[in-house]
Length: 175
Image (cartoon, rainbow, N blue to C red; front, side, top):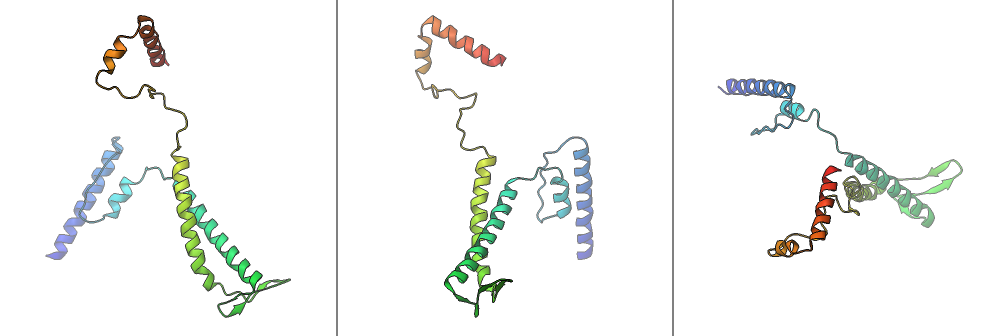
């Protein structure tokens, strides 16, 4: 009985995937499917043409920068102050660095990776979101929102001011 139920579920998944493929072929792209369990075949069909966020690159570069800077700082401080790390003493010789014990540095590298990746993600969201907006948008009205009674005051404006505003509005619509 349980085997028949499982096979029935897979048959429905195949039917759903085929239906989604047909809908996408007909031009429908903003589709949503609700399932009680995650179904990877449906996710693949729905996620196929979605754009990939570029914030991921900021996060990757921030994380790699954090790891590199953490190893540079920890190795440099061990060499300059002669710290014994992991039972070994770092020494700079003409052939390179000897006596390095890297496992103690991995904790600091991980923490710096998370820190730098988090900062880079926030920076990426701000940069790619074009924030802050320094120039007002074309739909910005410096007079602010209309309050009750504000229409009456604007209606009593001199005729030449009313005409000028309408000319500006017509010019903005044409542009």
